[in-house]
Amino acid sequence: MVHLLETHALTKQFAGFVAVKDVNLRVRKGHIHALIGPNGAGKTTCFNLITKFLQPTSGSIVYDGRDITRDSAGAVARTGLVRSFQISAVFPHLTALENVRLGLQQPTGLTFSFWKPTRVLYRLHDRARELLEAVGLSEFADTTAGEMPYGRKRALEIATTLALEPELMLLDEPMAGMGHEDIARVSDLIRKVSENRTVLMVEHNLEVVSTLSDTITVLQRGQILAEGSYDEVSNDPAVREAYMGTGGE
Image (cartoon, rainbow, N blue to C red; front, side, top):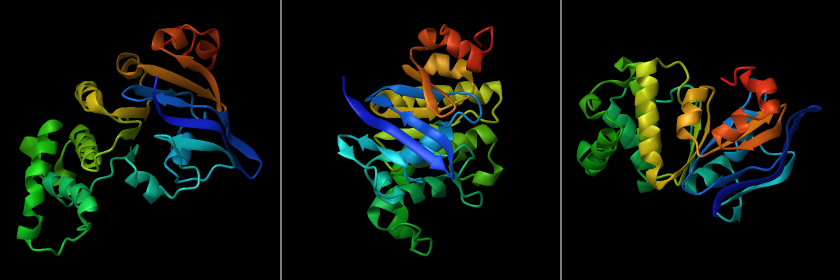
């Protein structure tokens, strides 16, 4: 069993308040791993620690066999560990194609070169269109992102994340604010993009978690309460009491 990401006794303390305590997380390569728990359980703090938006108080983070505990957020992203956020992070005044192209510009040294002649950036168009097709957005290529339906914006964000060629994608509540149709579409998309990469996601929608995840880690008060398959954690009495309620849903 190969673990692409591991945390060892990961702890974060804020002025005496312990948000994350001794979290030992192991994300298996090629799997979809979900991090769930009630509000305030420490899920987003864990994400911020792993992606280096926060530095841990103690403990360590190992990605692809290398200790990244003290690396910067930018350095971590360049290793192939890329995060998408709970709120759709696209440029609303640019087209879908232009948004994806910006992601593609990063490894080329043309990042944020809005002023470059079109011919210089044209070689990125084919790959940008391939990514839009991969997430079902071909028809929106020339649509301004701000005019796109919310669920399609989230798909666009995944396309821009894929443009960075991540080995590990961290998705922060990818279904937040979506209706049933969009949830089904984005769930299918996550399943598709996970075929050749690893996904770690925070998600409140337990139906989504149950159908997508290979492994689920349940957090409570910053600590791991349970871990396993959906059937295993949903039948754990402590999890039912802390998170799922008496019905387990």
